Image (cartoon, rainbow, N blue to C red; front, top):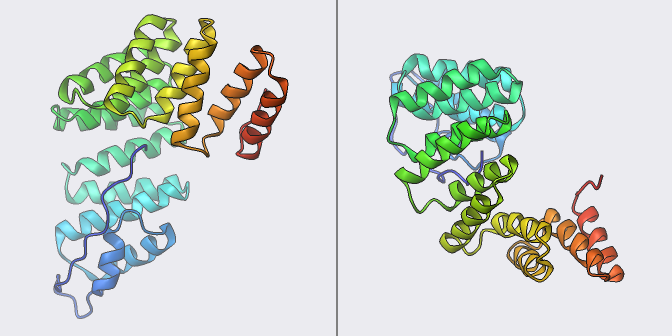
Length: 262
């Protein structure tokens, strides 16, 4: 799951015909995709138990499924996505969410089936090709990932993340020229893309461009001072340049932020 989803949307009117309806607060937190997972589970459960409005129930099952997913409770997430899709078979977010839950469980056939269905329903969405490309990247189907990312880019030519991820796939295939071109484009479109700077730093290092690699690592850290991978990369560069003290300092910073050296 990569970028933050939309923020809270409060429903301030009573919906459904039950004697007791979920409170506006419960509905608000159920809809808030960035709310605490446990809070969302409890508030969405209240909505599910007390509301009869179909669109609201579709959303409530989906949101609770998302929260179970965040807690790595994938079976529960899938059950809720099933309920959401039973009510609305064209609800895109639940197709994508269930596919990601199956992917996390390692059930790749079912995951791919859901991603395929998502694209069949909405073939003009850059987002959904990007999601399926993530699946292909995880399963190391690089050519399929590149194909989906190319389609994602054709539908949204300013999607910096798609260029960056396609650059990763090209790099895995050994096509360094195309990888570097994609990282360049990602940075042009999004100058604060610390991941693209970090990846480009690695390529420049491998090409012997240590000054360029160091500049990219520096920029990545400037954008996100907590990005452990760039400290590890910069440590490697300093060591190659003979700056052992700086290498040791960056290695310690990377380790402190959770980077695991081989």
